[in-house]
Image 1 (spheres, rainbow, N blue to C red):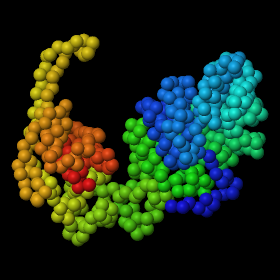
Image 2 (spheres, rainbow, N blue to C red; image 1 turned 90 degrees about the horizontal axis):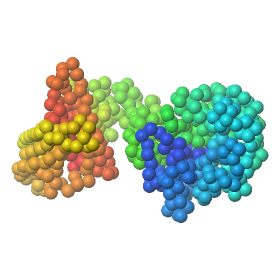
Image 3 (cartoon, rainbow, N blue to C red; image 1 turned 90 degrees about the vertical axis):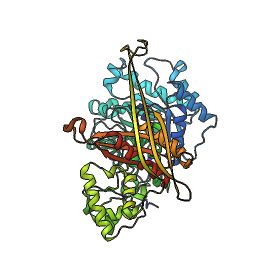
Image 4 (tube, helix red, strand yellow; image 1 turned 45 degrees about the vertical axis):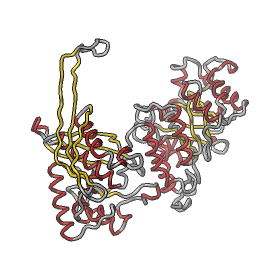
Length: 551
């Protein structure tokens, strides 16, 4: 989808904002993220594919992974098509000498054309954290910028705690900015490091900086999300004249995270007509968001604006019936503009139109009595504990059955799961501090009727062992049908979730099981519900396997 760059643009705003992605550095400080060098290379390739202007690769000298990353890029292992690589560091030490400053030397050794260094711009930090004078704080900035410029490096400068410092001592903040500009800094990045500022403050302060320096250098934004305003603060900075914004994919970052570039970029381009990515790249943003989530090994946030799985999901019958007539009735932008799509969620709140639309989305046609019967049965199932909006694969199989389809691959005769518990065997205290070992063995047997290629059934019995009932059932099933269905070799279960629906019933409570699976290309979720957790698990497992065979 081609975006009209001027369609919505107020010409007092900039025509373009440069995107500086710090997922590899600031984003890696998010709790639960630990990136290998290979991870960083894969993410950098995705960011270049998206078309961000700058990629901050890390801090040379901080750890072996960052050193290896910069070395491998410099040696040609990764070539950037659209992005420029940036090395991050800090100013020289208080009262330190430039010729023996390890941080600055490492920045030059990283062999990037651009260096981004962080400097203290809050007088409180200079006086109390660095324990030096304000004059020395200013000199640290000027000396460091000059050193890098003299070594043929472009310099971006992150002014740490800038908004807090500006509120307390405006004069010192301006002295810091002047020291950077005089010595050749290209971008002055105003950082809301603690994330405590609000949009009206950011817009006012940024406007003052732009008025003072905007004709000489670019002014940039680095906003943290501690008040939930990181994106809003970045937008406020752009409204005031900033033309450079730092952030991360999916908002990863220290504490509550950084500016979500996956939200900021569409806001700029689709809402304000300001260019942020190369033409045609905005449609890649959802895929890149999810790909990066996979690499960092964190589940995608379904509720993220624009790129989340739920961003264009509709549950209420009133919404879905309106969307059937006018897609823009309940969607603020075309999902295709960001590479996402409309989803209709089916639940006991659904009406006929929702079921019909969902079926059509799956390539199925339900008519008349089929639709009425399916809706009634679905509401009964939801009432008993099913939750189909979380299990699209099971929903698709349910709707197929509603139009007369049946599973042609296998029929279950029976299954049995046994768990042997052998308590009391001792093991070394250094292995088990409790000083004992309870041996647990799980074995499953399945009896199936499996159809051959001509449709004729043969009875198969197989046994499997596992570290629990689901694992054992899965092993037994694969043993029974693996020869007949080799496509299952690439199918693996990625998650298993159990929820007790009526805890007041104690051990007799209804259990809901959700199983996530993938074949490397597609991902799907299936559901099972029963008072017996193993039966619920089998339902979800069987649906997962059937769905895989139907792909």
